[in-house]
Length: 101
Image (cartoon, rainbow, N blue to C red; front, top):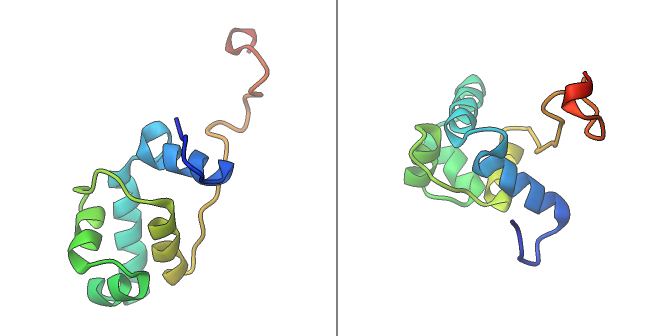
């Protein structure tokens, strides 16, 4: 649970990235693919994102255990993407009992 001075959205994204939604391995793999599609080196993306190349490499290879929302936002911004929150299953109403379906 997020108890810092982060916004509600930042807290939700942080929890999602930590494991409730996308696994960091999958996220890193997606970032690697986007980086390669855009023809950007790890060194260039890392520099523009304000992180080390080693940290970016760990993220891309699924060896990073956590990442801040701000850092993730910077990386995705350089790649031309943004963070978005979506329901896991848009066909299930959160207020509806799953057994009623």
